[in-house]
Image (tube, rainbow, N blue to C red):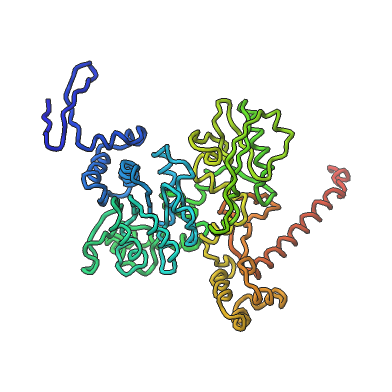
Length: 527
């Protein structure tokens, strides 16, 4: 029988497999751990449980520095969950890990609904911070011009903060460090995650660094920043060069897809092929997903499940929000459930979506038709995850689609490389008498005088860059995901549209010719 120290542990009696009573040691943090969701508590391995207990022993202010692959994320989620009564929670991560983090939070903390987690998409997207339990934020938004975002973060007074890849804060002069450091210092609980902390230059003493290597961030010239094994051994150096060259040859959208996947891969090209193979086949000649499409899919699924459909309504979430001063109070939620037979002949409401409900009354996701959570109002149970909500909005809203493409490609034309969005901001903010000169010195100078005059008089974002379908809508590329979208300036967009029109014309001529062509094979004979 093992002894239990009485300082930090209590003795409890439990039954073993043979029905005998045996003592076991229970730490003083067991009560906090017992409050974790059962699925999360069972998932923690002994060394991870030890890490969580260590964090609790430090009152939730610690650094978890396990090596990559040992489960730092799940440990941080467990610690944050132990203090969930103190939330709101802020999670700061590299931009490529925003969605994987949201999925992990939803997976291990089932009580979180999609509406409880606010993903900050851009620097002006601050409306949801004050009303959400969890805010997820990418490092890329923490810049010197993000004052409204920083003010919103400070006003929220987060009680718990998780900072993933905290070695991003190694430079004391970086904007993200200056923004995050005071916030971390003032919060009650702060969990920092990093790979292998090490000390760098003397001026960086005391800040977390990572000696691990992230291929996505490598340049071909900064070999001194890599582990010695990569810079010393010629064969490793060649492998890294090949990887970076392959990566650099990908469009920004492809890079973003690989980063968001969270997968490990030896070749970016092969990684994209694996992602494509894992995706559901999709083809549509309609540009956007409409309410009629959603209603049709919901009715069909409800009939298959022997269930019903319901109408969920609320203030439209696709439209840009007005200022608080002019914003009207939101329409009340409703969840009207009707049988499939009674709803089939009724057109979908202009202000809501028809959602399938199975025979047990469980709502089915508007995007993937899988089961949603049953807790929360009708509007909060439209989707089974943030991933499905993002996919749905991407396929159904032009405004949301443009914002996501801008986030990924920064408004850079993928054909000519023009910094189109940056040019728009400069022209918009310039005095009217200077706009003409600015446009005439760019690639856009070849546009018609009528178009240029419009851009000079009243510059709008849509005149400077377009979102284009790589696989055209008429070929089945409509209602697509990000991988089929690209940024084009108006000049390149016009050229591509003309080329597609030519291809469609030739295709129609070929189809028409095939219908009237004679079969001359009957005139052939064997000798």
